[in-house]
Length: 153
Ligand SMILES: [Ca+2]
Image (tube, rainbow, N blue to C red):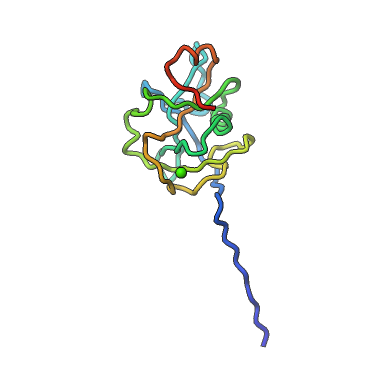
């Protein structure tokens, strides 16, 4: 009698999720979506959100640096300057406390077409607070340096 032994390997590292849209929710409450035109001053910033399972959720800042911010800006159709920043002014943006934290432990290479294609812990798996919500911006460094936001590359 022949028996076949099947070995199943299980990855314990990060996973890659299907492409999911992102958006930036600005401090004003205005939402910047894929393909939206830049404001006249060429500056846009906000909380990074990703759409999954029927609703928008947030992204934890763990692993979210300049490379991940670049992926976000590329996905949004923004070229040029980019960055990730942490801002006390944005930390308590309305709405975030009610949202699911969809992505944590992000690990981007920089050439991903969607943020969700970067390595991460899996949908909804996180150990974060909303005070750690990732933010991203696109704008000139001159404009950024005039703000009170703290740039973290
Ligand atoms: Ca984490």
